Image (tube, rainbow, N blue to C red; front, side, top):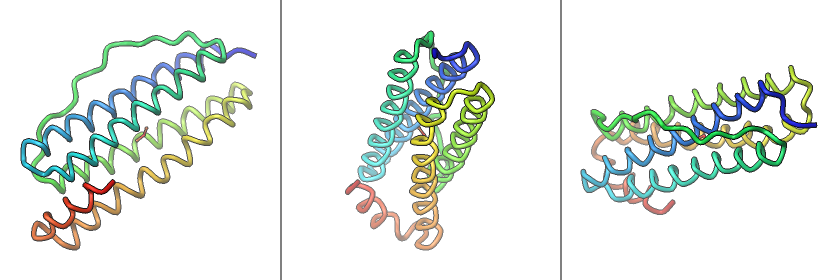
Length: 160
Ligand code: FEO
């Protein structure tokens, strides 16, 4: 059974979303590099690379299932944030948004009766639990330690 047209289109949208996420985190990495926060920049570069892996995972699966994959232009991403905390709050908010996108993709796979795709997407459902959790923990650290803890947090994020 090949991917239905609806699922193929939805995969293309998710591939775009993952690539946009990768660019968002790369932009955040550059923002941190400009500020000399090398640990935060390192964390963001790793995050950007992970998002690209997510896009490739979706591409490989969609092609394997006979989907019509399209690599399209990616919209511009933000480049400015008010503070390091604001950056990580943005990460947390964005990951919650991505979780909703994955849930909708799963709902569509259920509606289309595509069990193989449901099985494939469970990996992404589990991954989003981790993604939200790691972003929230960093936001919590900033809220507990404040700007005075920035040096320690930067050092810790550099170990990712
Ligand atoms: Fe690919 Fe961070 O979700």
